[in-house]
Length: 283
Ligand SMILES: [Mg+2]
Image (cartoon, rainbow, N blue to C red; front, side, top):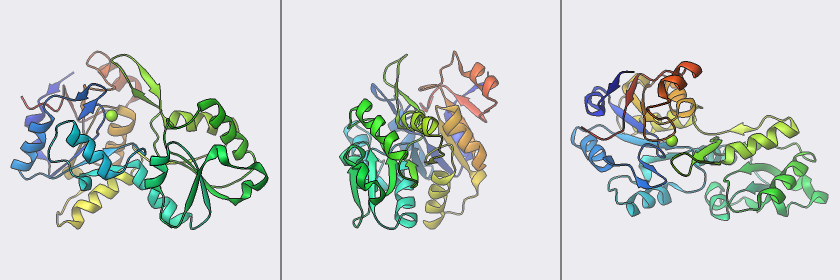
């Protein structure tokens, strides 16, 4: 396994897409070296975006969180979330009606337009279930799992409306060796028992990559897909998504993939990054 220094790779690209969790931060806080790397990109005039599978917070609140952790230079416009993609879908494809959500009230607030109403799915009255125009999985928090999952499944048995999964991640790391079930995992459980196909937003799908590229080109850059380097810690979201999009990809070993299991995971999944780097720390 050829481990490269990120400093040698970055200047070869015209734009950098970072994953957030496991690349810039983790359960302990900031990953060392983040500020230097962000500052370095600014110095060499290479724009960046942060692409995160997250539907629990707005861009503004994501940016504020980075500032609280002590990073300067990640503004709301730098952040692209899977929640934003789900929001766009709801805005253009689900014109009116009541949205039933699984997640926190805060997550529901930012995913909805002004004119839509949303209720936690446990408040769906089965007698009037046809009032619902969509069901949205937003977050793994904000509800009692047993009651909510059962109510969701029973709602899904009664209505046939679009079901949107605003974060496809199945698990997320909570300690060095431990993970917790994420929204995508909860949605997959419901999907498999009701035998339906839900609509999923987030990496590895291309929406966030396209959005970020269009956004940069709209700012006057003239980028092709292979001008972009996607840096992530997870093979089946960041690296697979980047590869499918036509970007180049760098796997870092500060999150889901460790130095110990990287080669085994690459061989067994067939998802091959263009580069492997220990972290985004400039050495
Ligand atoms: Mg990650």
